[in-house]
Structures are given as structure tokens and as C-alpha cells.
Image (cartoon, rainbow, N blue to C red; front, side, top):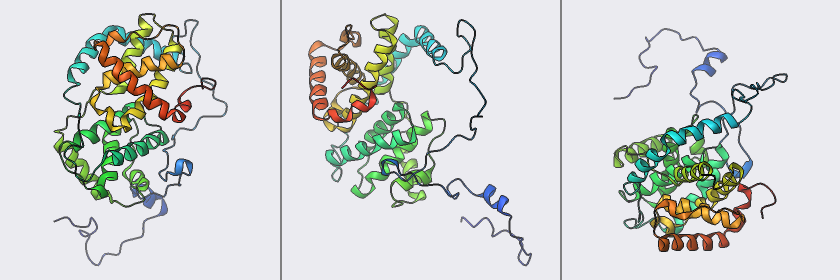
Length: 326
């Protein structure tokens, strides 16, 4: 039997009221007052940094080679590229071997109350939510994968589908983000329709149903791999490759919301998104599709379907690129 934490105090002893400092320090993050965000119509606040920058402080500058320049992203990019040279091929083979295990092809086959339209609305809602919090694209991909894999195991009521979405995002962010969202923030997004206990209970159910197998190979991983591969093989410079990757991410978001694309593996969607991005950006050296190992007819079918999807939803893509591309 769970009892209130104050029930063990001795009766009859007066308890002095805690000071304001103690009350604030003892409160949980969910109990502290938070400002409401007005952007995008979302109510959950973005967590702010605890270390504000000093007005007179300037970023450190490195030596002539730029090896120690925290203000510049190039050293980190060089380290990332070096890690790709050392481990990229073996890591890709390992993740590619796991792809079929983590790929739910028909997650709605056993769902009497959840339709493809409801799934599209939920994922289309999760996309701006993950941007609002500043979460990575990997978190979004893992959330959608967790959602779909759970749908293959358990029937979900229509009125609990949104709770499944935010709980899947919560689980994904715990794996990827340095600062995952607080439960209160996620519940605020749902207009407090659900309770903290409901979210925590569903989290446990999801983890048990999936046997804690959460490290799915995602579209995000394959986009990064193919981008590093083309830069390393000098098929494109870094700026051109990154622009193609940014546009490909936007296409991948659209494909994740469309249930018809569930039949395509993440690696196939990644390579076709990059190729279509090269075509839209008129790059002189487009990505070679054959590095993925897929047959030509499979690549062409997926690329054609993506092109149709983009043509129907092109208005949602310009935000992922610098001005002047559309």
C-alpha cells in the first residue's frame, strides 16, 4: 500500500512551514510554474539553457589549422568524417542487417479503431512538435518506428492514440536527446486530457511489448551515412551534400506520415530521397543509387512515389533550405 510521504511524521509535533526557497527546491519540475509558448499553438515550454552567455565573452579561436575552435563547426565535422572513415562501413553493414527486424510493414493490419488517416494526422502533428522542442530528426524517426511497431502488437483505442504518439516521442527522446522533455510538457501538448500515471503506464506497456528493443535503424541514420559516403568519395562537396540532406529530410518527414510508404525500408527511402533532392536542386553530380544495393526497378518505383508525394505537398518543403531554392 502506497502512503503519503508525510504520513510517517510524529503526531502532535508542529511542522514549521517551509520557506519559499525550500518549497521551490523541493518541488518537482512538473510542479514548478512554466510560461506558456505561443508559437505553433503548442503549450509546452522549451527548456532554456541554465548558462546564459556573458555579454563580453567571445568564442575561443583555435590555431592556424583550426584544430581548437569551439566557435566553428568544422573541427566537429572533421572528427565525424574521420569516425566515418574508421567505422562507417562496418557500422552500416551492422545496421543494415537489423533493418528488416525493426521494419513494421503493415502496422494497422490489426487495428480496428486506428485508420491510416488518423496515423497521418498524428505524425503530421508530431513533426512540428519535435521541431518546437528542438529535437533531432533521429528522435522523430525513432518515435514513429516505436509507434508503428507497438501498433503491430496491441490494438489501440482511438481516444488513446494521441497518448501513444507522445509516449513514443518520450521514449525516443530518452535515447537520443541530452535534455528529453518533461512529462508535464507532453501532457500540456494534449491539453491535459491524459494524466501522468497514464503516460507512465503506457510507457511501461510499450517497453514490455517491444522487449526493450528500441535501437532501430532509421531514415536519419541512412541519410547521414549516404551523405558522408558521397562527401568522402568526392561525389559532392560538403555544402551541396548538406543541402541535399536537408531537403531529403523534409521528404522523409512527408513519407513517414503517409501510410503507403510503410512498405519501403528506411535505407531505400533515404537513398531515393537524396536522389530526388539532387534532381530538385539541379546538382551536377547526383548521388549514385546503386551504392544502396537495391535493384533498379525498386529504386525507380520508390523515387516515382516520392516525387508524386512531394508534388502534392511541396509547400511544406521550402523551410528546410536556405532562401532562393524555390
